[in-house]
Image 1 (tube, rainbow, N blue to C red):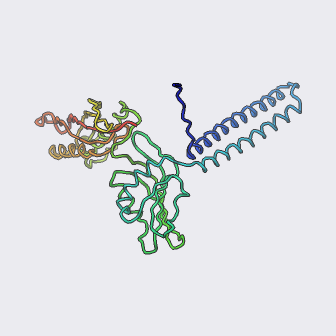
Image 2: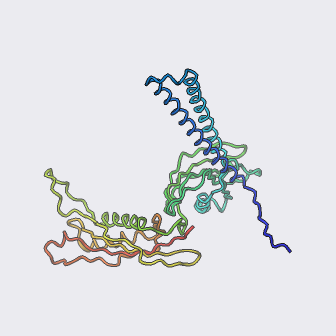
Image 3: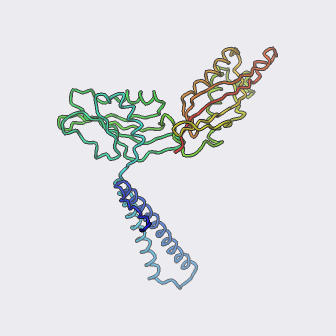
Length: 355
């Protein structure tokens, strides 16, 4: 009895074949550009030799070199055209950004209109029975960095004449409610048979899964970037209007400041379903604006920390717990107490999932 293991041969999908075509076209383009550069250098070398009095290069050599440059240039143009053609024909099967936006549109239209996600614009066709249908078209792959997703989406709604048109304002509002940063472009409407077709393009600058998906564990740099964001929020919370600097250039007394002293991961705990929770602690030296009472400054600092609950920190995860552990105000009896920095210590728990 043979124990030979047979290898299963898989047939590439249309999307994979289109990606291969793009890669091959780009590789050919790079080769053509390199060949053109070599031809230009060879022709330039002949010109330099002749200019220095070298009679060895013949007129035929010079003419041939010039024609090689022209030939190489034409081949570069052809290769560039091939790249553009392959990119236009590329079939996208990465629709994770569109799937993420499905929940947004489902809340608006899902109960009355079926929602279809596709990476192929040509598939956004009207229903043959004349029923309404909404497409989320993602023509290009999702850009992912630090758990943040971005890209372009086309929203297409086919609707009977009596149906309300696509509402760009409601789409934008629903996205922002989830913390997504989007830009809605001009809404256009056309007629297809007995249906209206509404087209809306969305530029999604920031979107994320409920539990952000990271390519790697948080680094010291990403943790520090998160802490610097917090540091700016702390500064804003204790800053009040202050007089402009004098013409002498002397600093204005009582101006608010905030200095990040430390930021580090103090624990990493695996959770359910592949999630990971990291605890981050930070420490800051914060000086409140002159005239801001201690009580209000304390409340504002704590509110600034609490406001980060639910926010996504790039490369770290979503904040699921935020706490101002301690605010050391020093000795309030000192004459210069209003100008002395407070030591603010915070603790955050952030959740992510590794890809």
